[in-house]
Image (cartoon, rainbow, N blue to C red):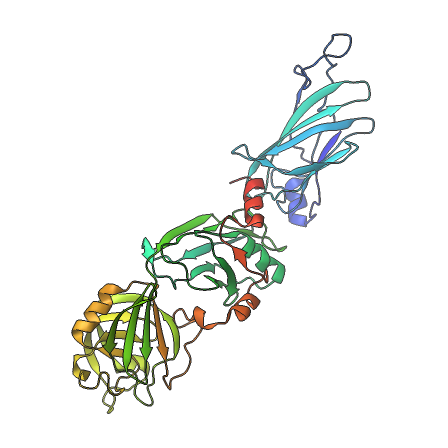
Length: 426
């Protein structure tokens, strides 16, 4: 019976390192596997199951190739287990005739495994042997940074999930494997999907906003998984968890210069505001609160207005709630109180009285929704300037998924769950 590592890549480097070395095996002769006796009352005859048991790889085996065991002519395999350092077994298949076995579960790079092999001969003899092997380290590792990563326990119902990859993944099959290893679980369950913003950034959102009070857990479960065929393997596992608060939506109407503040569908307050004047019109569309600053120094140079021009400014602004990275806020603007509710005079932000801005600041959190309607400004960018994810239609959102279909967050996705069950942990 021979034990071999299938698919030796045969590179000059590998051949030089591996040479003709054999992995040691240990025959276990004194303790036959079968506990029951034959008709004559005697225990099965013990055989040397370790005879000619060898592997063509050294301790640097290729984790991208299956581990195989083959019995010598006249013998057959009765059981094979391949276990990682924590005892978790790698899935495998034994041929119906018992002649060979091969692993079907993924092997992690840089991991030590133990194989236990039981065999029988044509005369009823039985025996067991074991061998150790170690897979080589991954040439490339895909690290995955999960978000939201602000360390908060509670976010608004518009907060998307994010996964940032350490290197770009462009192959469609590799993208599918990345999505399969990202597990989203929530209570209550929702229907959602991943969207590839580019080769390194993915966003996940439900079809509609998260329900109020939802518990969400996002996990990267791809540690040790082969992502592509060029030696890229998943990096360390990670998890983020949070809850959503009330469904908070602030609707800013740029034509009436009023903000309607709603909580869980009920109107709580209506406040006069001013938005961007002609040439600086506020973006239309749905935005997500990115952060809040008690006070912030706003300078016109940051939006391309040169200092000294008639439109330049340098102001300390209070109770500032950010909705775009380019500098759009909802904030206190005591200098424009006379225009609030009447006309639009800002450079793109939504301005209100100091008292109203303070109230708004205290009633909102990161992830809440601010939607601008009836402005002459362009549409909020879907990506790159904050979270404009909700401005993408659901049908178009699904087109951005490598899997091409939505998933339920009621339980771990089957592919990720199966991989986590079968994969030995490093």
